[in-house]
Amino acid sequence: MMMTAAGTISQSKVFVIGVGVAGLQAIATAKRLGAKVEAFDTREIVEEQVRSLGAKFVKIDIGKTEETEQGYAKELTKEQIKQQQEGMKEVCAQSDVVITTAQVFGRPAPRIVTREMLDAMKPGSVVVDMAVSSGGNVEGSILNKYVYQNGVTIVGLSNLPGEIAMDASLVYGNNLFNLLNEYWDSESKSFNFDLTDEILSNSVVTHRGEIVNSMVKESM
Image (cartoon, rainbow, N blue to C red):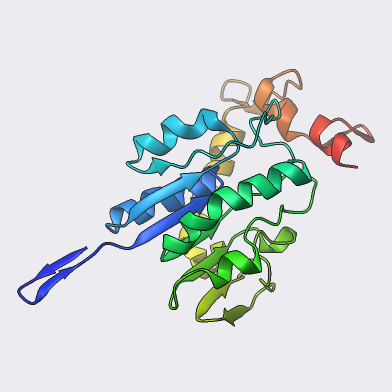
């Protein structure tokens, strides 16, 4: 929003689909920039997180949904995806920016935004498909390309962290340090890895020639 002597420019409307780490950051950034933000996730448990950032949680009745033990959303049925698309159509049409982050571990990304939904959006609108590297949430998105369709720009960049390499490297390095530091024994000056530890057991993929990660096993 911008208020000047010549008049007031209304705030942009942003719709975030998928409220994981990337989705929450997109919501927070859009709010800081002054946008009116709405968000949707198949896991209604994240509604409180969305509201805590000052955004509106969009409720769409798609029946019972499930999530993994790690908190990831499980794959929807074709009927549920259709219901989801119907519920999102009007929200997308009213939005200036749509950001999609929905991915399913070990599976192609669900196709959420259809060509029909894109055609209903205003000219000048932007759709950012952050799931493009795993198949894409948006019909017509192309890996590492900008696509222009009926006045709508579809952004399909796969390596967004690479666009801000210095900051991304700093955050990634801090995360790695904190992970390793958790298992560092300063007295013996050695690592103490316990595979029964919750964090470690969910991080290790293979051990002694076998796949030990349950999520990886299920996706194979």
